[in-house]
Amino acid sequence: MAGQKLAIEGGSKAVDKLGPFPTKIGRDELLEVLDLWQMSPENTSKIKAIIEGEKNLKGPHLFRYYNPRPSKVLAAEGAMKELIGTKFCMAANSCTSALVSAYRSLGIGMGDEVIVPAYTFFATSATVVAANAIPVIVDVDETLCLDAKAIEKAITKRTKAIVPVHMRGAPAQMDAIMDVANKHGIPVIEDVAQAAGGSFKGKMLGSIGKIGCFSFDYYKIIVSGEGGFYTTNDERLYTRALNWHDCAACWRPDRFGPEKENEDLFCGENYRMSELEGAVALAQIRRAKAIVAGHRSANHKIKNAIEKFKGLSFRRLADEAGDTGICLVMFLPDADVTQKALPALKAEGVPCGGIYDSKVRDWHTYNYWEHILQYKSVAADKLPWSGVPKNELPKYTKDMCPKTLELLSRAILIDIDYNFGDEECNKISTAINKVLNVYIG
Ligand SMILES: Cc1ncc(COP(=O)(O)O)c(C=O)c1O
Image (cartoon, rainbow, N blue to C red; front, side, top):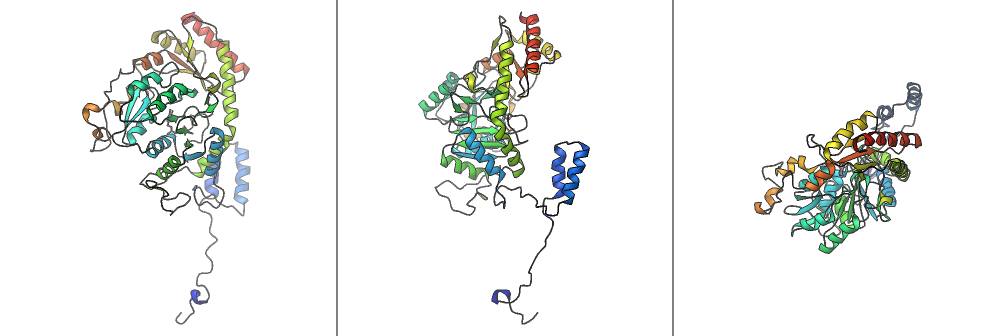
């Protein structure tokens, strides 16, 4: 050993080669993924044999940044930008994460208020609290989305964002909402979790407000199991969201770069999407238009075949052409007849559900959000509630949005599948007519 020339001085390398070693993620992992697709046993064995015989298996690098292959997450972001028509798009691991990133990128925090609808999945409001701000809960109207008139009354000096949720696939009344927001100079964050592919008067949902937040969890229109997207035309917001979602900007493309502008760098969380979700999301985004077209067509067929009943009305569509058509919402005359008609519809085999039953807990109506109504906090600091003088906190009560509860208690939601053809649509509309004839005919 002694006297040997160092490699740095032209000597031979002590370690000339490491490996080859098996890839970090290899055959076993691929087979587990394949198992999710539930192919026939014969085909599974054939594919298994091919995978086991593959000599040059190059395992995937499932991290979105510094990937030797073109990133699927990056491609999915590009496809989303094209679909929604915004300049920027950031993938995240959920819509919940996209929403927190939205509030944080706008600089929302302690002492701020965010207006949210009384009818939405709880995540829209929970994320406001997670960002240390205070949700101000207001009524929805017959669109089942935020009521622009109710927003105006709820604005205070603390209001820092308004979050219309395009509930159950249909657009909120975005013109009236944007008018109120612009009049007061308050940014709008569209929660598009349930309405990817929908539009309002020709503009794609998620491109109308400052920010759009999408969910790709399995129960949404286009899905990747878990996943979310944040869309915007504002480069600064995008940069701040990217940094928030990426563990304090630790892995962003220019990894060790200094901040371009003051307040670009701050401590964030990790909401990155993995390449597995990115790959599924990419394929789904490519199919989005066809999926939405299928929903719309089936929805129209069923709706048009429902007879005129006195006392039957449908959800008001702020823009019928922009509805994704994932469901058809009917209003019956009162909660009592709604609760009677529902089991009858289910017994006929109609894919349907109620939206609000005062005896059944549900995370979509504000009156069950005790976490908020009772000012609950995760820590002894009692944030976000301790960030505002007590007498300035919103006075939450279970009956503060009566219009929402009244509307929802009379609503029946028919689930539409984009695969429904004429036969399914006919059967469903016939069953609806059969039941409504008995209950409100
Ligand atoms: C309106 C709305 N916002 C936000 C979310 C949260 O989405 P995710 O499950 O992707 O976090 C959901 C999910 O159900 C939702 O329906």
